[in-house]
Image (cartoon, rainbow, N blue to C red):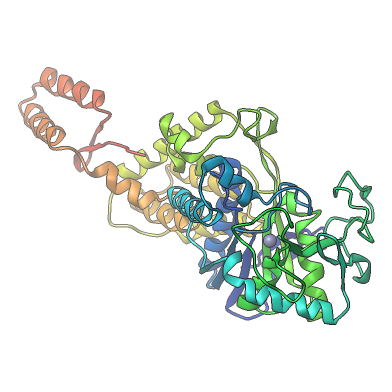
Length: 461
Ligand SMILES: [Zn+2]
């Protein structure tokens, strides 16, 4: 099947051609592990999970690498401010190492709740310091670097087409707008590859290097890790739209300087989730975590379903009402599936309609419409619907097979009432049968009398 992806590098929707026949190298910029991720941060990983699952469904072996930034990301995306990890340790009274361990686990737990498959490999920035130093040595040898008071900087004027991703030559590049002002820098877009430890403070995370004691610049790890694991040029690089102007142009420039090659052929960027029209931010009181969703009675999978109703390149406007509607929508799908009968029989035509939608630059909302249309249609027997939708869910990742199984697993008390109801119906005692049905409904159990007899389901998201 032809797959089309909107490539930020060329600003075009392009036919996807993998470098190797059956394999795709995929790199996703991972989280900076200094705090709980909010659901807006996590939504991006849902989209890339669908991309990965879809490529696997098209018989590609996907090698997926994700970095975990546990050092070097400063409070501004440029090279100013404090290291986010070093700052968090004051907040929590722990070492930067403990902060990293804690929030790596939180991140892994969060993506598990959203049924996001883990990458083939996670790499922590602090695990690759040696390789990062080697990489900087090459940059220095090739004369891309210069030294200023606070670190070793990359001279972006030495790279042809720097900023191609963001059309940087066309957007405003005034210092202070895009990048904080540093009078020692040769060009406003220059960035640190190695920062020196400040003389007056003792950092938890710092290393000796040929240039002095310090720590790597934030952009460096992605260039190094992707080269280590996926080679000089790999297939797809993904990340948030906020990476378009600083992080990704810098990654690309460093990689190209070292290897002479384009780092990745396709660059995909997801838009951010908006909350009441604004950014999701702690200061605005709109910082929603997975735990908070659960406390309010929502399933993380309902959030996944909501996210997939949106296209990854357009901003999703999150509201609690929209999440509630998504939770009801998902419950309805599971209820339908639970009432469908085995054995399972596939309908390839419907599956192809679905894959067609996703192959069109991950149009998951069109894909979900295919599922809904099949559920609503009387043209297919229920065992066909069952198999087809469960197959499709290998890509959507709503965990429908598991949710269906749980819905059919009823408590003992309900099973007893259901037996009594069958007896009542045999005796044509409709009053008892109806009152039993009412009691079951109150327990959240749906009862239907089908050609194959009485059936009951209890959806638990
Ligand atoms: Zn990155």
